[in-house]
Length: 90
Image (cartoon, rainbow, N blue to C red):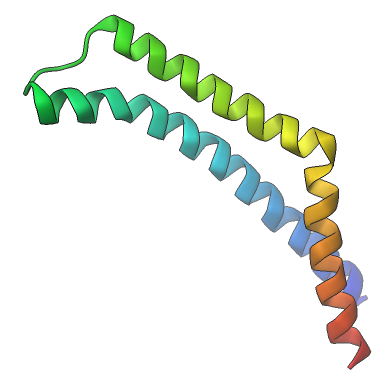
């Protein structure tokens, strides 16, 4: 019972981390040209910098999803299940 609860809890926690990382990377990529332009020029960025930020954000999201699809989720879950098994064995 406790093992199943911990498994569901950890899976939900990992999904929350995945989504927060994906959206965090997207927002960071969107904010970067604004920060550079405000710091250097004191002006807002033009549309090409915003387009590049969107492109980089999409690339970061695609890379993270590729990692998860290619077995990253299994590796993370295996690591945490090993921790759960070691704590249950004691």
